[in-house]
Image (cartoon, rainbow, N blue to C red):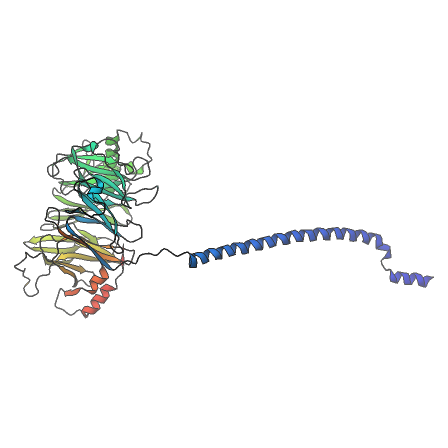
Length: 569
């Protein structure tokens, strides 16, 4: 009996815990079911995430494939190294404007001329309902093709591009100023944005250029300050009339502001000057260099005190330092005591909002501090011929200046003076012919290339050729890395009306642009606008050495050195 019990105990060793274990197993089964169900839910979620990831990846691959192989990328026109366009039987205004009109990141050329045969002309006078007119034309900087052409009812004084429109694009068009009172804003596509209502100034004549101001009427579009004189009295005007104009629709902002003048307003070159405190002043030449606060002009035009103006305009504040120098009656400030100012230029200084001011008279060039108006230096000359050109000749961050000085009959001195001290860095006497074009400069990586027109004197005796009747112009280039070398880039008998060197594409496409032909007032003839890459002009240039010493470089090595230069804006 005992053995049977023992055997039964061996066969069922946990018989006594059977009930408890059964309960435990039941609970375990329930927990396992729960866990299985949870794992099933997590597994389904994981599968959905995996599916979503692969679907997104698949869509991305489809988009990349479509843009890479199926949808063609827009083809950017290749910028030609040189191009030229000629118009027959025309006379031209002596200027052009460089601006990216079609927004292809290549600078375009805008200029104006008059046809004497208006048939078969795009945007002709007949299409505009006009009997005779001038044409403003935009050519593509890439290949010289016509972008647009507009017929205008009056002679053209200025074309200023880059009207600011904060609601759409920063550069939305050009302002065309004509004679006697044409003011037309043209969109970058050539369409008219607005035209000034001449009834506001029927007895006035506009003189340019205009000044592009910040937004004064709170419509998100930059505005203008336009200058007028009594009609037919530009050269002997007794009043200068200032008018604020809306950049959005061309409507006047307030009324005219009158300013008495005592000197001729020709040439007229106003500018906007911003002091270190951020105050805006309008500077212009009236015998001396003078200035007026923009807030004074705004108050006189609108009759609204600045305290009551709804604008939150920092640029309408005044500068305490300049207020002390302002005449309380005329509200004018005298910038320079020189009585025969011809040119007034702003000079950028890193870290200084006001920068400097370069004042040029008939026989003096002086640099002033743009805030305190203190004189830094002055440089005496015989007779100024052109507006000075700024650039970097020294290895520092201050601008130096190329000055063309008429020294005697048929001779001029080209001088580069140090922007810090006014001392001479480089100079050369040249033969000076009539209608010599303006000089130019363009920045290289650390310095600048200076370009100017004239003719080197003969090496044997430095004499001037007897026959100066031929309209021959030589374009020269000098760089501070080789100051004893001049490259002769161009030798031409064409009548050059306007010239500059500019960067057509960022860091790579520096070009010479020339407008040649017959000026307004002459008999009509061919007009040519040309663009040539500066590197190509260097390749075709002639090396001129200013001294007889051996500098250790061949002509080919020097041209290769200049050819490899990189340019910046």
